[in-house]
Every structure is written in C-alpha cells, then in structure tokens.
Image (cartoon, rainbow, N blue to C red; front, top):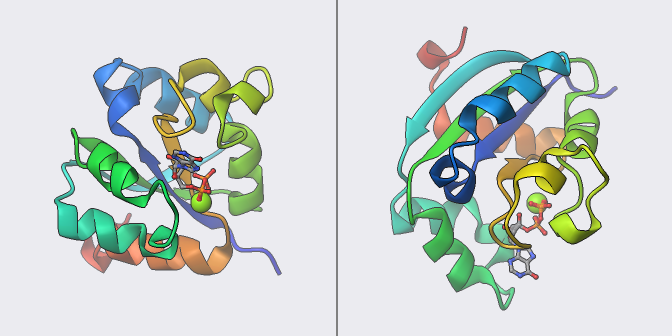
Length: 139
Ligand code: IDP
Ligand code: MG
C-alpha cells in the first residue's frame, strides 16, 4: 500500500527568488496538508548526510555547497499517494524537461538549482522527515 506522507524542501534558489509563498500555495492547492514546517539553514555536515545517497555522483560537492548557500524551507506533507503525486507536481529534475505548470518548470533555475526537493519513495519520506522533524514538531 502506498504511504500518505512525503518530505519536501524549498531550496535556496527559490527562497532567494522569493518563491516560497507561490510554491507553498501550489502545494496546498494540490491537496497536501502541511504536518510540519521549518525555515532553516543546513550546515555542511547535515547537507552531506541528507544527500549521502549521491556521494559518488560528480555533482555531489557542488550540490552540498548549493544546498548550504542559503536558508531552505523543510516540510512534512500529507495526502493520499503522497510521494508519487508530489513527484508529478514538482516535475523532472532538469527544469528544461519538466512538464508545463510543474513547480520546477515555473520556478527552477537549472538542473542543480531546481527549486524544490521531493522524496522518491515512502521509505525515504520517513527517513527524510525524521532527519528534520521531531515528534513534537508534527501536527
Ligand atoms: P531529484 O531531486 O529529482 O530526486 P536526484 O537525482 O535525486 O533528483 O538529485 C538530487 C539533486 O541533485 C537534484 O534535485 C539536483 O539539485 C541535483 N542534481 C541532480 N542531477 C544533477 C546534475 O546532473 N547536475 C547538477 N546537479 C544535479
Ligand atoms: Mg532524489
């Protein structure tokens, strides 16, 4: 059975470009309820840990630099079929390939500075949510 939570992060490019409000609107208008939310700045160690799965990718060091370059908005989101529907809502990793109307198509700058993160599985949604939020921070 598919899970009903996903984890998302508005990335530093979209925060700097003043898209927080528009992105959160699109997420909630799409049926997601916010269960936890945090405006914060990751340090290098936290970013390396969050993206550990990509440690052998050529873009890993630049990705860690980018994600620590400014504050982010972390969100725990709930909806039926949360993970798969959210990946559709945000669009392809490379905004040049993202479908019209998706968050990345509208707000991303590049394949790296792509505005938003969305979990890729139910398992990772739980791992990523636990990385950012304690039980007491979820409502
Ligand atoms: P996803 O965010 O769509 O799941 P992943 O493949 O998991 O994409 O990559 C994680 C993040 O790493 C991307 O969102 C993007 O910020 C960055 N990234 C992925 N591929 C590249 C690349 O080819 N060049 C630079 N950065 C990349
Ligand atoms: Mg991914």
